[in-house]
Image (cartoon, rainbow, N blue to C red; front, side, top):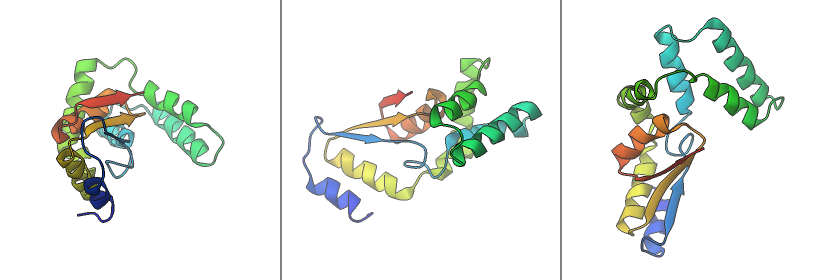
Length: 148
């Protein structure tokens, strides 16, 4: 068990009125789900050089403090513009099995289990898109999802 987090959960209050809200990227999974999706698009030849360059430039600018998070997210989300929602859902499920599922932090499974044993309401709140989060949420049995 991941001490002391799971122990703290187990010694705390119980009931559905207690919410356990988790971020997705960097909290439940090690890394950023958008990276896995963009790598998949690049492998399939579905990412143009100009789009890849723009994403890379924006990411570097954000990392260096020259671009704010909102701009970074706008550019990132544009990478999925024009894609059919059903295809994105299939992509999310495929990447869960091939990539994202392997990125889950093992200690988060213990913490989620502790929250379940206490009867807490578990949710994911993320800036990732729904098709990125929903497959893992379903796999983990998390019903409540908020994607901004």
